[in-house]
Length: 554
Ligand code: F6P
Image 1 (tube, rainbow, N blue to C red):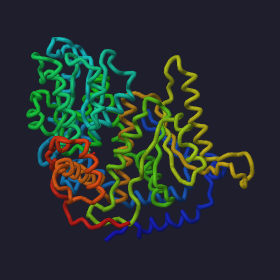
Image 2 (tube, rainbow, N blue to C red; image 1 turned 90 degrees about the vertical axis):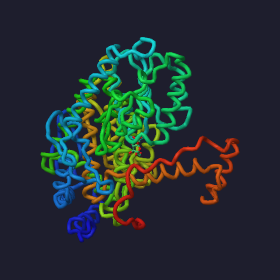
Image 3 (cartoon, helix red, strand yellow; image 1 turned 180 degrees about the horizontal axis):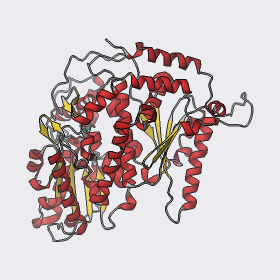
Image 4 (tube, rainbow, N blue to C red; image 1 turned 180 degrees about the vertical axis):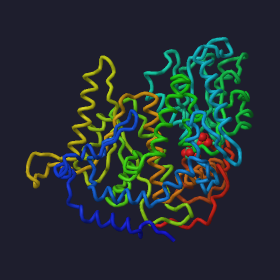
């Protein structure tokens, strides 16, 4: 059986790591004046500079060999063609189908899925046009002014991030709110400012069984019925994006207002589907299509470019170098763009829920590190929060700097300061501090790596390409690590235990550890009527994982 860590290439990379411990990134530039030209790449409206990495030519060659020797070509072809690569849930992985505009056929279980993809996209167009034009009326005959998306995880993070990123393209008379946390203050804060007559709720949930979303949706419906009075018409103010048409209609949503998507779209990959409805409402259907087009162009690049000139592949290999050979535990995402301030949170779920795995696709424990801890915040704020640790701390953290080049008219000076701050920081991380000798206790060691990803402008198309780029980077890493990037059994565990605890708070809780029992005691004191309403334990999203699960290795 092939073992990644015993492969010749893996061993060669380990040897190279040992040989390059004293290398300095800046010396690579001195040795090769063409380094920037050789280690930068443009794809459409995106430009990647990956030259400030602790990666010599020899290391890059071996990393590319790792990709060449992996199942990348086969698994990528399988994904795009609809083969079942999500093996534990026995599903295809076809978020890419959602943005191949009109091509086809694409067979899933012997059925061409393009017609239903196209008809749902047409349903989104009609609906977004009606709401944006004011043609869609609430129960009092007024147009919609506020849109509330109720969802969590991939049913929140993608549309939330995109609506924020594309704020300058947003409809001037529509306001958007995103409710995700089950903490009542989240929905209370939003509802307190709304008029039921002009508010539209989108219940976004792939399964229509997520406890937080159902509780928030029921609270919204109760608020609506209580405040709208006798004319309240749930059907004119609630729509759903879900794979579970039946449950949506049982909630009170009209069949024609259920925007369906499919089991072969993973939650964290679903913003290209009906989950992207808030985006289409915010920036218009044409803007939503432009976002799909940007992702589609990145798909085509990913499918056709040789590994050495393939942006997702290169970013994936750079990450593997740091995670598996340089001991990095985390990956920092620092967008120098306030419009992208929610991008780190989106990429956190995309990466950590996909590659936070410790068994391979056969259920065997892996003996190497997999997905990193992804975190981050906008620059220049980060400079005044955590850059100190990145400059002088004991941790080794590769950074992705992301920015858009085109300034907003009238704010050129701000944008110039923003971009030059970013370039200065990337340089300082690499060079370290110049003053004082090496013995100077206050010097910054430098030699800290970063990529710089520049968008010509933050448009729907370039945002689509950026997000697809990271989707494929995560995919490539998952293939090389031979893990299933598309299930999330760890999350199902959390959902199940949350259901058990909340449904048994007043029952005998001896089944739990004494810590949980003690804490339940404290909680119960505040819920004299035996705690919150009983929640039926939501069934896991699908059947038991296939194959025997053994304890993961350390
Ligand atoms: O976070 C786990 C998860 O299943 C995500 O994959 C998904 O995006 C989120 O929960 C919400 O699930 P649903 O869309 O089914 O409510």
